Amino acid sequence: MHGHERGRARRQSQRRQEQKNAKPRISHARSVSRLVQPPFEPLTGTLRTAPQTLFHVRTPLVDGTAALLPLSDLATVDPVAHAVAIAKYDDTPERRRLRNTRIPLVDPLWTEVVFLSPVHPHAIWRAWREITGRERATWEFWAIKANVLPSGSVWLDRTLTQTGESIDPREVSPFDRARYQTMTATTSANRAWLEQLAASGHSGAWFQGIPHVLDPTAVPLAAAEVVDWRDAP
Image (cartoon, rainbow, N blue to C red; front, side, top):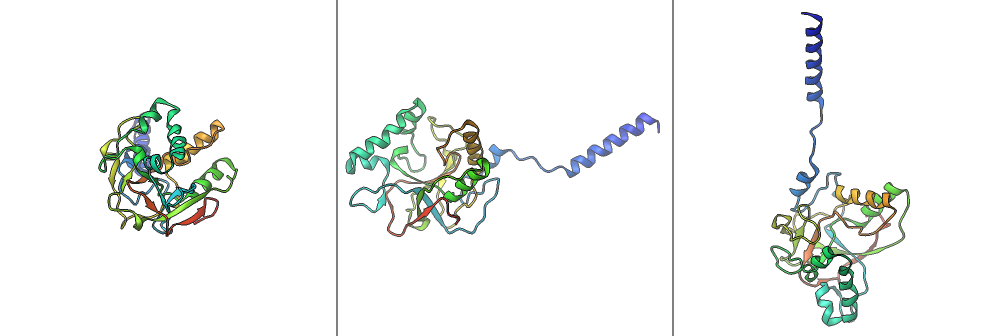
C-alpha cells in the first residue's frame, strides 16, 4: 500500500471510531415538543422527590374567598384588582392579543383560567443563583396539591407558537393528575431565558419557558401550603 493510501485508510478508520464514540445529538425543539403530557421531564433532568404539587405566586385573596380566581372573575368581585391586572396586557400588541387567546380543549380565553406552575419555585431561584452568583429576596408561593384540580384542567407546553399567536392544539393535553410529579429542576428553556435576562441586566417573567397547568375554575386553597422560593423542597 502506498503512503497516501495508508494515510487515507488511517483517516477513514479514525472517522469510523469517532462516529462510534460520538454522543447522539439532541434537537431541543423536537425533544421538548414531545413532552406535553405530564410528568414533564426537561432536558436537564429532574429529581422525582417532591410531592404532586403545583405552584402559584401568593397574592392577596379577594375578601370572602379562599381560592385563586381566573382573572376574568375578578371583574365582578374586585373591579379595581381586575383593572390593574388586565392593564398589564396593554404594553405590546402581542400581549393585547394574548388576553384574547383561546385555550384548545377547554375553550376559555387566556384570562379565564388559573395558571399553575409544575416547577418548584426554588428550582428557579437556584438556577438564577448559579447563573449570576446572586440570591433573590424572599418570595412566597401557594403550594397546591394536584388532586384538588377538576378533571377539566389541561397541560400547556407552548413550544410551537409565540405570544400573540393562536395556540396550536398540539401544545395542549389533558392534565393527568395520577401521572403528575412536581419538577424540582427547571426546564432548559427557562434556564436559557434566565441567562438572557442576566446578560441584559434585567429580571422578571420568571416562569418563561415553563409548561403550565391551566384550570378553568377557581382553585381552592383550603389545603394549600405557603412556600418561599429560597427554601429547598
